[in-house]
Amino acid sequence: MAWKRTGKTVAALTFVLALAGCGTATAVDPPEDAPRRPSARQTLIGRASLALDRTFTAEYEWSEGGTVTVWAAEDGTWRVDVPSWAHGGTVDVSVAWTTGGFFQCAAGRCVRLAGITGEIPKDFDPKVQLPFVEWLPRLLDRHLPFAIAQDGDCFTLTPNTVVVDPPIPPGEWCLDDAGTIRSVESGAFGTLELAAEPAEAVATVELPGDLSDAEPMGRKAPPEPTPTPDPSAAPSATPSPSPTPAE
Picture 1 (cartoon, rainbow, N blue to C red):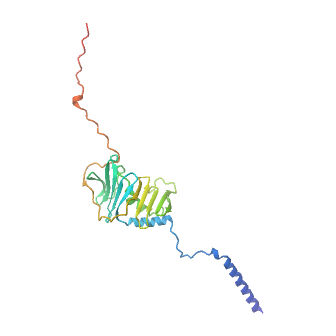
Picture 2 (cartoon, one colour):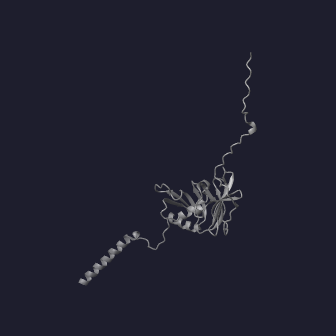
């Protein structure tokens, strides 16, 4: 008899546990190995990493007017052609980095701006090259002080803390899953938008001009030269004789 009572007790407990299991089926956690969708920050880091490894030649429509050409050569040198930038928007310039340093080229001559480990002085910096050569590596920082929102291939960077001097300006980056920079928007220079699919990269960047000791060109128009006085138009130093008073 004792065995029969024990058998009934086990059966009852089994029935209760079965009911409890049915009631909690919807609260079971998903398997630990289930794939999770990466965050916007993780996706941006992954695409920026791919972009860093790319070499290409590409044209970007610039919101300031004209087309900016970016040359990312296979050997790591680079050049960016900027339309109508210098001398009040009247002169096209190129900025480049080679094994000789940083250069500005315009009107067939190139001026060295800084050494190979230096930087372009701000008065001669068009800034449109910065996303490709300086800001892109900083997107890999997981502690970048921005909230990052993703919409398709575009990522909006919004400051989430009070940062006096953020490592890059806020704005919007559009990078596809192959690491191609489709567009960049920044208050530093406006917007660059890819005009056509990138072409193959050159082996190395060539400066578009001869080296010169001339002064580099700034964005502002040069001051008007002071006119030289015409000596023939100068008044005589000898005073005219006074008229004779009437008697």
